[in-house]
Length: 171
Image (cartoon, rainbow, N blue to C red):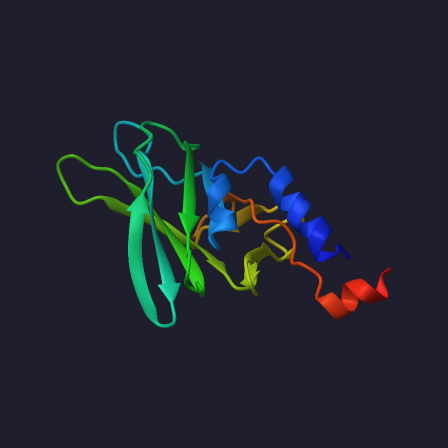
């Protein structure tokens, strides 16, 4: 396990595109891309974008959206986010849509980051699990009938710091 000092230096060494985010208590992440998204358009491939919202307590708040990436089943957004500065997020919902000009946008499914993916003590940290590896790269299944569509997210916050008592034992 890492000591708090090692954990802090690891955070400073990440390729975080929002370097002030972590230092200010936020959760820094990037919506990288979608893979194998369903085809929603009749004459072309989908024009995908993502709306993202945070859930704090029981209150959901839409925070923003990515740009639309047209005519592909594998859109790359590379949208950098800093969420949750000063609050504890319970989950982040990512709703994927197909942009339509003449009608309402098509819902292509939802992917969710929950407290099983990240935690918070003083700062947010990554939890390694079935969806996320130790580097914070998360492959989230989208809740559709397709079995291979995913949303790829990168969390930059690093591992959980070790408590002071644990770090004294490791010395």
